[in-house]
Amino acid sequence: MALPKIAEVINLTDEELAAEIIAVKRNLFDLRLRQATRRLEKTHEFKHNRHKLAQLLTVEHQRKTVKV
Image (cartoon, rainbow, N blue to C red; front, side, top):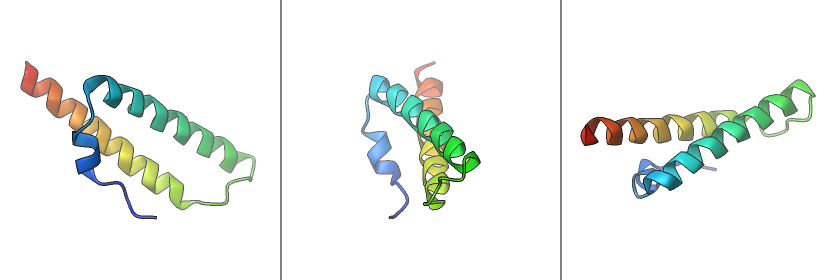
């Protein structure tokens, strides 16, 4: 599984972007919960989700600074 591409994130609308940020944060929480209960099998999902969250937050920040 490859890391997510920024081009996929740039094409999202503001509402989709906000929803995706919430979904990724929820997914990271679930991963931490599974890790704590020792049910996590795919540890690489942490890296992929953190990478995607960073991309989402970067695009969100860029849009806010450009609009102001």
